[in-house]
Length: 486
Image (cartoon, rainbow, N blue to C red):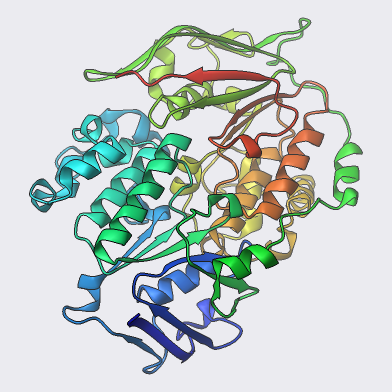
């Protein structure tokens, strides 16, 4: 096989993204490589180095393409910027209401794919595999997390690069689409000789066509090994320290305020014939659903079925919620309650929240903002609130980075901080929309145990979203499956 990428004693020029040891790596033509490692180990940094997005000092990296520039032969997909540049112009509510969208400046999926997509020889295959036809007239910023991945993958694949580097391609995709994406990548690689490099957070995401694995540990890149060697050496995640769970069990029991219903077995969420439409597209149709105190629900369904839209109604982020017959904490929406009274009782985390929360402030301030339900911290927390924020950061294992800028954290560290933010209020309703995005197996196991332990407390209700059965906490006992409206 021909060598495509060769790195000898590579050192990253940016000290904030440096590795602990020099990088030595060779990537051969047609290899299918998985980069694996724990959160903050340096997986995404290595992907950026390979794709020439993160520069090495000197001439320590060489690309051996027969023709064309590096940019012609390499495509890199990092989904954290799927909506567009992280420039602060995107905000959370934009996804839920088109009145916030500047239609002249905001592209649709079809416009973003461009004219070259219309004439691409694999156009029909990509449209079929990723089910893109219903998305063509949608604005990119209104796509769901899973729909965004389909769109970005299709856009990268239509030009058929020699080297395709993808950071976590399977997160947010339902099982059918995950299987289809794997089959598409396998087929394209076999027919074209494309070299694939996939960053993966979990062993179960490893497609069976992978030939080699690069492990990254503590900002050091280990030697590339075969998939057979990796499977022999691989170890799964462990258990959270019992001391942390004991800390949770000793939390003082707090009583909800007057806004929370006092009757026995109250209804926390009640949707009565709820329908949501955008133009001629129906997202939710006559949905009836009641969630009572103490219930633990799994919300599931295909990408685009309306899961995140439903949660945006519950969490008061969707302006259409006031036009729907929804009761929260036994209060009918639009009868005088404020958004902040609702949010006060809800702990929330989602891919959309992480995408819109682009604040260059310390991790501690990010967690503390959960007391005020704001994206950013605009008032000083009290000493008691700071103590609680640090408590939850310790529970989630991010107390050691409390002073570090949120924007300089890895995706996994950011997600753990946002999880701590969701818990700081000791909320009565936890809404966790795909909370394990970007977490390695060890952290997934730990967070599941935290959720299970927290839900043993009185007055606690859970709505949990995931496409992966192995990521559902054991406390979950009920399921609502949404079906996409065609």
